[in-house]
Length: 344
Image (cartoon, rainbow, N blue to C red; front, side, top):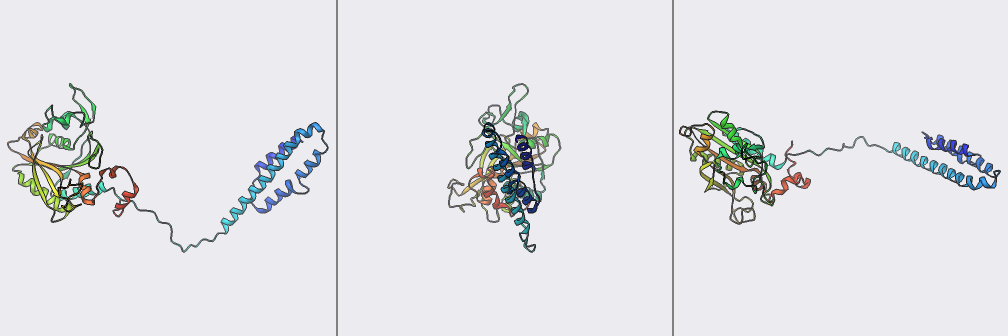
């Protein structure tokens, strides 16, 4: 009997009917009044008492297996029939796919580039890992300048003899490479990602994006710088945006200034973004220091130039009235969906 049970168990496990008629044949063969299980129980009555103690449990498990297999196959066939009989309305519209959109920083970066292209500025790019010369020394940073300290810069390798290697802290390094490898006039902007070892907050991050600009030629003046930036602000934020320049200091420009625009979020009434002053600083600028020109092999007595640099996050905050720049890097779909009208 045990040999028969083993054979029938394998048959049940491998059985897969394709129709209700085949399933019914399975039921009759194993579970019917004249089926295999009925015959096995009749045979069970004739075995010895010792064999009954062993075979009784096995026979009951076999019967349970056959019943569960039948029930499972029945439910599966019924579900398949219902699915095949379901009516499909071919006139209904198909399911659409959501369109993607550019990241807000990409939108503003593109707009900034387009504005400066109208003024004849080209786009230049460079490496994000820089040596000391291109990131600091060529730009007139003295050795004791705070920007060289670990608190501001992510150093990859510090070597007094070979020179430090670090993640660039600004895209000014691209300006140096461009002036070293070419001849004036230069008129270009340098968009890219930069890194600084700063505490992350609503107004600052350890990585962000910049657009820097450089114009070097004969007879370039601070008036050219002011008019260039004034045009940029009016194009980006709209006519009527107020602008002011404040004296400042940068190692690579002299004279230097910071440019503020009227806060578009509070309209000058005062808010957290403008520190309740009504003004937001959006960029630093100035005339290229003659030492920087000479470091790059350019005659500072013949050529002059101006440079400027801005953070794209700060520009985007004002343009879209976003109060926390951490949103740009958190990949929150609820936030990013607000900009999906701009197709990729």
